[in-house]
Amino acid sequence: MISYQLLVTVLVYSLMLMVNQRLLIEVKAQEEKFSKEIRESEEQIKLLLNSTAEAICGVDINGICTFCNPTSLKMLGYDTGLDLIGKYMHTLFHHTRSDGTKYPSEECPNCRTLLDGSKAHIQDEVFWRTDGSSFFVEYWSYPIWRGKELVGAVLTFIDITERKHAEEALYESRNMLVNILNSVPQYIFWKDHNSVYLGCNYAFTKAAGIQNVEEIVGKTDFDLPWSLE
Image 1 (cartoon, rainbow, N blue to C red):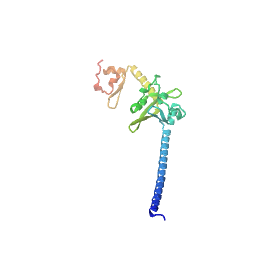
Image 2: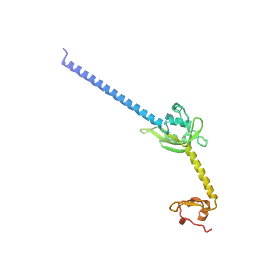
Image 3: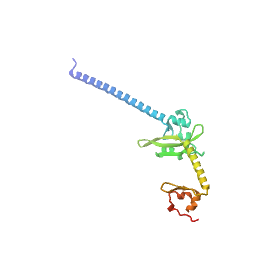
Image 4: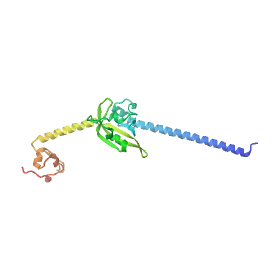
């Protein structure tokens, strides 16, 4: 006959097997749930990166590209992410300034982010396409931290070439208007609704007793040392 102690041991062992099997099933279910959530999260991030109008690239601590979205590829003239991923970003599209001089990486704000973790926002530089042409960009560089360790940076940028051309056209138009006003012998000035001067032409500065047109901005008639000539 089977002893009572042996029977108890068998029952306890069987219960332990059942509990362990139940735990394994629950752990596997949790792992599958977590894996699904991770896949969904990764898919959501991918959809966001692919749908944004801004170009987005990521680099590791050495400035090597780790990811890039389709907008960045389109702006830079590349076909696939393989053309960028694994390569040094500064050498690819930020190697030269707008005037044609070389742009050392140690002077690049984006590269500086990888050195000291500082953020950067630049609006007066150019990036270079793979065909050798350039375009004006506004870009932001943000550090990536893992705890207290700096591990890389995220670079986002937009093409502002049209904005730059519009600003240049506006500047040229303004200069032309200023030249016309200053060539007219008649006095010309303009004020706001509080009778504060906003500007004038060169002829009016002589009557107002001031040296240049910038001096009149913000003044009223009572502030000016009127000339007796």
